[in-house]
Each structure stands twice: as C-alpha cells, then as structure tokens.
Amino acid sequence: MARGNNPFVGSIVALPTPFRGGSIDEVALVQDIDFHIENGTQGLVIGGSTGEAASLSKGERHVLWSRAIAAVDGRVPVLLGVGAPSTSATLELARAAVSEGADGLLAVTPYYTVPDARGQSAHFSALAEAHAHTPILLYNVPSRTGCDMQATTAHKLADRHKNIMGIKECTRSIPRIQSLMGNPNLAVYAGDDLALFDFMRAGAQGAITVTGNLLPRETAELIGLVSINPNNKRVEILEKLLAPVIAALSLSPNPIPIKAALEMARGYPGELRLPLLEAEPALKDRIHAAITSHVNLQLA
Image 1 (cartoon, helix red, strand yellow):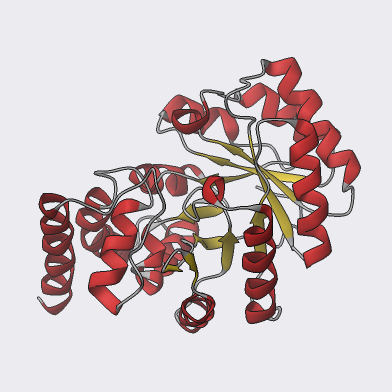
Image 2 (image 1 turned 135 degrees about the vertical axis):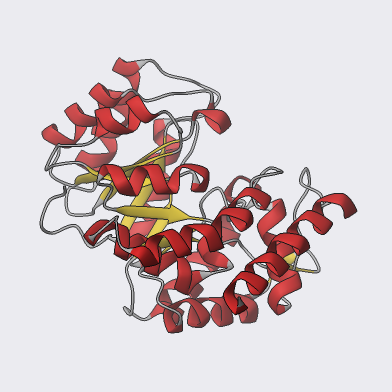
C-alpha cells in the first residue's frame, strides 16, 4: 500500500559511484544510468550506501548528483541519499539535493549518534517540515548505523507527514516486515536483497536493490510479477536464477562484491575508496561462479 502520489515503485536500483584514479568517473556514471533505463530499472538511488556516500566530499556529492540528474533527464524518478549523523547536517544535504532536482530524498537513521524513538521522530519531522513538498523515504539499516527504527515509529511519522512516503527496511525479520505492512500512508521497500522474496510476497511496494545493478531486467521482472501474482510459474524460475547471485553479492560489505561483479560482467570501474578494499580472490571466484551459474541456468 502507498499514497497515490508516490513516484517510487518496482525495481529501484542503488547505484555504486564509479571511481577512476581517485575521482568520480562521470562517463561511466552516465553510461550506467543509460544502461539501467534501457533495461527496465524503474528508479535510481544516487549517493546512498552502495554509492559510498560516507566517503564523498560535499563537492563530490554535488558533482555526482547534478551529473546523474542531468543524465536521467526525467526518464525515471531519482532518490538522492541525504543521510548524516546530525539533523543539521541532514538538513544541509537535503537543501542541496532538492536544489539539484531530486525527485525524493532517501534519509537514513542518524548513524553513530543513535537516537531513541523520540529523537528519530524529531529528526525526521524536522526534515519533513523543511521540505514539505519533497517525497521522503525513511531508511532503516541498523547493521550499518547502530540505530534501529521500529515499525511504530515509521507508521507515526508517515501518518503525521504527507511527504514521508515510505521506508527502505534492511532487516530480514518476517515479523518486522509484517508489522510495517498495511498502512496506506507508508510504502515498504525491501532494502536487503536476501529478503527480497519475503518482502514482495508480503506486499512491498518495491525494492531498493543492489542485485539490480548486475541483473536489472530479471530483478525488475521478478518484482513486477510477484506484486501481481506471486504464484506465477515465472516467479519460481526467476527466484532460482537470482538466488545464487544475491547470495554471492552478500558475502562481503556492500559495495565490494557488486563492484567486482560489474567489473567482471561489463567492465565497470571496480575501484573503491578506503577503508574499503577490492574483493579478495576467493570472493571474486565465488562471484564469478554465481554469474556463470546464472548464465548456465538461463541457457538450460
């Protein structure tokens, strides 16, 4: 369920940020965006966790956001990541993102500061009130932030603020998934690909996915089919195709595996920023095996 004016639905891919020689590779970024739009991706996240946002300077965020918005050119909705440990820093990022032309803001719970439910409510209320005409998606990823937003807090925020459209939820708990569902003011998005099938079968609006970087068509098709008819035979086939790839891409902190996979599959720049290092040989072997398995299953 979701508010009728929510532009974010289906397969929304969290893009990595391409680096070459320590700088953002703007050519690779534009090529990647075109690739996704041509292959059925229905929305993009720029400068989120997958995009190594915490390693970007303010100037680099500006370059990344403005170049991405220009390249998309209104063809799909774009969420810009505005997470920060403090409310003031989040509001500063949000102002910049809105000025760049964001279709919506993806706002993670404040990391390191770890506010309780009252602090979370105050934080997101401040953001919603400052940008009352901009859609906002809450982003709960306690494994990264140490801050876990409970379903009751998310529901209250969505009911209180019309522009808080939904939540990207990165836990795998079935009870948590179920507790988020059923509110017409709160769209729910799978935020952990390992729980993608569970979220979609429970009625999620879509997924903000990493696997979609590598297999955009299959990911978008699966999400679309499950939302219409989870018993469709094609759903079972797609799950079988995607499962080994999802598993391999979850073996190391994101975006280490996905950048390795994209480099193997289509020459995407695999460079990361410290403190992240490229995938070790054993992980690359696992990823290569998963990609090969996917191709073999497709041909079978």
